[in-house]
Length: 99
Image (cartoon, rainbow, N blue to C red; front, top):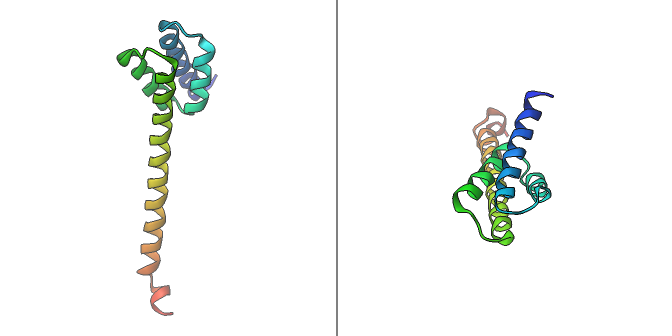
C-alpha cells in the first residue's frame, strides 16, 4: 500500500468510526468519503461529526454538501485567478504591444 493509499484508508476509517459512533452503518461513511473526494475533506467531515454530534442523517449530508461546495468554490476561484494572471501577462507582453 502506498503512502497516499494509507492516508486515504486512515481518513476513511476515522470517518467510519465517527459515523458508527452516531449509530449509522459504515456503508454510509463509504458514500460520504467517495463524495468528499479527498483525505482532507474527509478529515473535515470527521471533525464536524465529532464536534457537532449531528442528530440526523440530513444534517450530516448537509454538511458534506457544504464542504463539497466550498471546495468547488475554491477551485473555481483558483482557476479564475490563474486565467486572470495569464491574461495580465498577455496584456503586458511585448508580443501584444507590437500588434
